[in-house]
Length: 75
Image 1: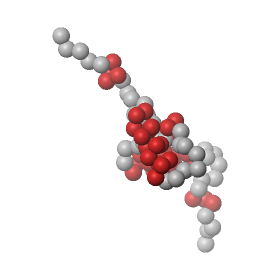
Image 2: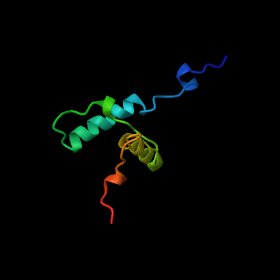
Image 3: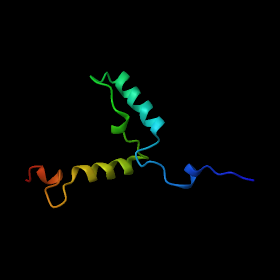
């Protein structure tokens, strides 16, 4: 009988696989000489630039408030 792992039947963590986030945190801590070790819980691995820009727009834009672009001086 065929067996399918239950983890394959559901969405994975939106932040990326835990083992990859741990490796990225260790890599950046070592090679970027971070003053304190980076926490893998604060690392997000995204798939391509579109995902990065979407995440940045979500984080940087305040609903009902001023956006980052509106803070630039107008000519």
